[in-house]
Length: 196
Image (cartoon, rainbow, N blue to C red; front, side, top):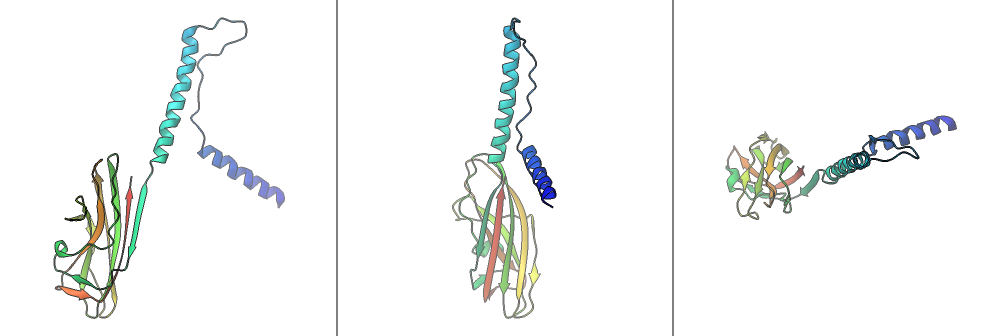
C-alpha cells in the first residue's frame, strides 16, 4: 500500500510540474572547447533565449489577468414591483467595476420574491455607467416566473456586455411584473459578474 501511495504521489507531482512548465527552448548553435565562436551564432542563441523568456512573460501575464468575479447577495425585503423595469429601483447592486482594458462581462442573476397573491415577475440584469443615476437593461435572457399564492418565485437571468477600458460600470437587477404593480412582502437577490 505504501508503494502505491508513493507512485500516486509521484504521478501527481509529475502532472503538476507539467502544468507549470516554462516554454521549451531550442538553442540553435552548440559550441565546443577550442573552436571559434562566431558572433552571429552566439547572437542566434541569445535570440532563442529571449524569445522563450518573452513567451513565458506573456503566458504569466495572461494568467495573472484572469477572470475577476464580483458576487453580491442581498435581502432587500419588501419591494414595490412596477409594470416596467425602468420604473424599478435596482437591487443587488455591485460596487464599481472599472476595467483598464476592453473586457467582456458575463452576468448571471436571480431575483426571488414572496407575495400573498399569485404574481408573474422577471428580474432583469442591468448596468449603469453614470454611478447609478440611470440604468440600462441587458436584454440577453431573463424569465418571467409565477409563484403560488403566498409562495416564492425565482426569476433567473443571464447576460453579457462588452466593457470599454476607462468606463466605470455598476450592475444590478431591475424587475417588472406582467400582472400589475404590487408590493412584494419579501425578496432576495443574487448577482454574479465575471469579467474577462
